[in-house]
Picture 1 (cartoon, helix red, strand yellow):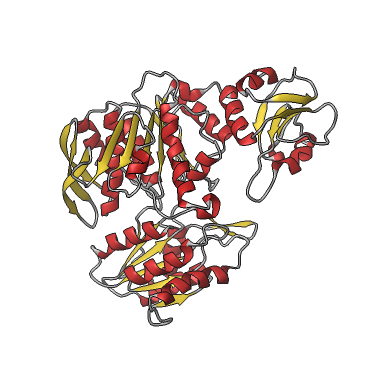
Picture 2: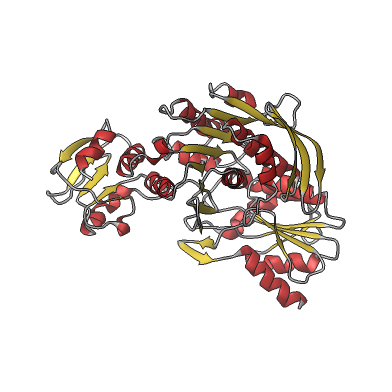
Length: 499
């Protein structure tokens, strides 16, 4: 593609040095990936500035760079100046990949908790109802035919990767795409060039204040997804905006002027609501009431919060025109999401569950749900990530203290922080509500050892929850991403202890 074509998609871009008649063969933001004919985009991150790596990208073959300030580079390199490279990357990527979101119905799902489950469930329902659908989540990328694990640790991919994935979905015949939209991704303009037809908010609770600084800023970032629905270019799909009627921030999001507003929840005023809910150890059943009628739903997902996630999925698909009866039937064949309420069975006399719960609210919800199906004690192993929201650490400790019978504090991606300090910050929350070390909880920086401590505590009828890692395949210590598989390591540990 000609550089001039990309410039046309970036209205605020201007060349400050070098030639305009360049052939661009690649978009990249990682200098190590730069090849001949690349346009390197210098992104300003939290810990690194892409401008510092532009020279390395040029050495790798980049012939043009997208920058927010002039750089000292080889004279023949074309420098394109823009006010914000995050925004410009999205604009350039949409043009480079032929604006795939304009050719499909695109659904964005945001919220503090439940995004991956809701996103994946929406994709499953649409495919079961005859709509080839791709899905992009924290867990996996589904191109509408095959699924591939997400190894990036990003919930929302960078704009160039997101546009490439959307093009792959369309190329495989996809008519719909469901995208998990994080607050980081929305704040960094990763979805600004994606034409969003439908938006879903699962809920909003305390999280990511290390990045957003205030709850108001966090909430505003989530609201951008609904603004994207309003700003969508003309397409042959209805506008749909789905909000949680039970969430305390419902009124704020309803005021964003979201087109095609539909609410879900358990409240009587919700457009899509559940009644006659029956929670079981291996399934959930309820009647869903919608503007299109009502249907009985039997879901393999367990716990009350997954009823809410299912309501959100049903609200958006029926809003897009999928018949309620077909959608309700499709829920019954949903295979679930790896690392979300995943059962680990290795011959032990107690239950072991792996779940991604890594916020105070999600941990509370999972513990409360498991309490209802646990005849004995409820034990949880958890931590809190380094270089992330510091304020939630003590809150996590309080939640464990108030909703579990015993807990083990451990490491969860400490990154460059001292893991002992992170654990002590969590412990402080537990101490504030009267917990005593040894009687009520233990602490081990070694996550595998923490599993052993919890498993030694457990007896027949108990449930051990391993929270925070879920589907992830690595644990980050310093600059290293070490291999980690929560369910596999738990299985190995159990076999070693109970074989």
